[in-house]
Length: 295
Ligand SMILES: NC(=O)c1ccc[n+]([C@@H]2O[C@H](COP(=O)([O-])OP(=O)(O)OC[C@H]3O[C@@H](n4cnc5c(N)ncnc54)[C@H](OP(=O)(O)O)[C@@H]3O)[C@@H](O)[C@H]2O)c1
Image 1 (cartoon, rainbow, N blue to C red):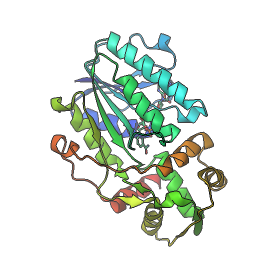
Image 2 (cartoon, rainbow, N blue to C red; image 1 turned 60 degrees about the vertical axis):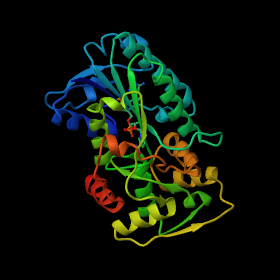
Image 3 (cartoon, protein in one colour; image 1 turned 120 degrees about the vertical axis):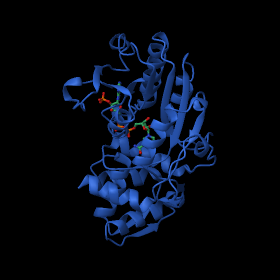
Image 4 (spheres, rainbow, N blue to C red; image 1 turned 90 degrees about the vertical axis):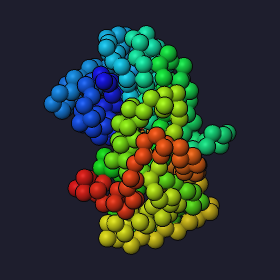
């Protein structure tokens, strides 16, 4: 199948592209800057900016299926508006070109008023992509553990730099991290499953952990002992500024992610297992592999 990967240069995209080639697909990688994209052998590269519709004609030519792996967190406060525009432009261009399947990797989290702007935006993108004339499949994931994952780097840097962490109540929120290798297996497998067309699935690793456990277990995998002390009066806003002081993660990315920590992100429906069975990677193994990759 001829498959377009948007966000091919990103953390998930760069892991997905070789796996699609390995699975026998004819892969086209989309990026805004082809000059800085290091394409693997056999991968075609196309330039396109989802925020600039004039760059999109031709991008979807002969494409049967496309992956949507794009977000605009790095652009700052108006990321919700930019992600709205990017998804709308993608939907129009892919529909006009007659693409038949689209796979979107979005975010886990119950729908509701209290959803953080980042998670709300990921769900809005899902709705906008759903307006296309193709069949959409959405996979929703919490934090993905792997080398190059900004959210995992944030955890790793906190653990590396702080022997004792004071943290707000969100350290008790549940989360279901997933290894990048498992995410890639689901993303590749779902394309081969016609029954997944039009469906939304939740994906997660085998371990449900509070953020506190995630921090202490990451520390243990690094051979460190860390104390996480919950302080009820610390607001998520304050803790975001504190993360700015300790890590080098751009605040445009860290702040929306930290705001999202108040929302539990766990799998409540495991119907994906009947469609794409995956032997899921334990958190400890995922962390060890990520640390090896980062090194
Ligand atoms: N990382 C996680 O822990 C995690 C967890 C759950 C869900 N997800 C989802 O997985 C997907 C990919 O995330 P990621 O972590 O791989 O992100 P990432 O590493 O930050 O990559 C983002 C990608 O978006 C592309 N992009 C940004 N603006 C664009 C635009 N205007 N037009 C075209 N491309 C644009 C960039 O491509 P160029 O710069 O090359 O143009 C880049 O490859 C997202 O949908 C995210 O919500 C990620």
